[in-house]
Length: 351
Image (cartoon, rainbow, N blue to C red; front, side, top):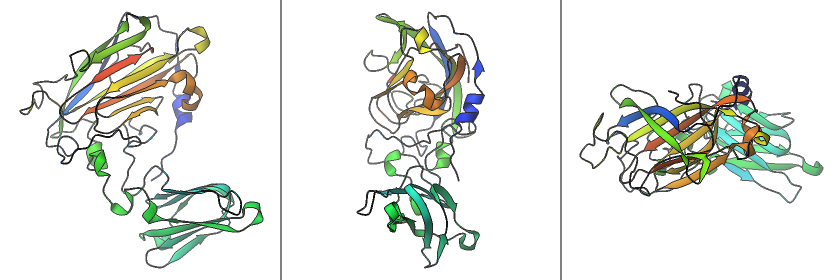
């Protein structure tokens, strides 16, 4: 499986619109999906730990505008091993083990790449002649398990070979389980979080109202947290109910909305979005991950200034773009949820 950035297509879908007038309040309506406590990805874990985990989801939204778990049965999204500078020139390479081959990125033009399989056979890709390449396992070796990969280049005219072993791969290779700390059973169970699935979850609409902050009317705020004594439990006593707990703790919340990206030179504030709370939160703008607060943890905070990353995620002044917000409350005892943003969303919008 290949993961490719779809920036060009995302930019092409943007629609030119006018700049919205300042709003007194902003309403955002999304879908809350309730899960039973017995679901594998929610309360059903022993030996809880509470770390912030980044990199659980892919940096691009999937084709159906849902997050994609960064694990696909042996194809992690991150490099598994990087070997640095050598004594014979600065030759660095990164090999990512994929389910059906490898991705190689090198500081030097690669001469060849050689696959070694666990049954003792091997296959050599000659004349690669590139600094990056994605190489599929050849049909003659289909179904075999990669043991190691060698990458050769000639930095400064000196032959140098780097070797990468699958045992150095990040967790998830070779059919190993998803890291326990993620508290996610499988890509299939994760795919239920933000989709309506009969017999697995129940869904309802929920609206939050963002109000201008008294000390800064350019910032709109919604808070339901331990800090203001409210907390975020939008479906207490509803859907599957509280299941004997003081609140309904096991749910997700998904919002899709739009906004106009305006020229920074034509306003006196930065276009920002921030979230503080627990548990998992992922925010995508123009299909690109811009806030990553994964894992079951206590209250965490992250923010993004769209003006500083506009070119990276394909924003152009005078066009409108999607913002996708994904939240999960997966564990007792708290549920904190605070959004602050200077983005004047085109609301009310419904996903």
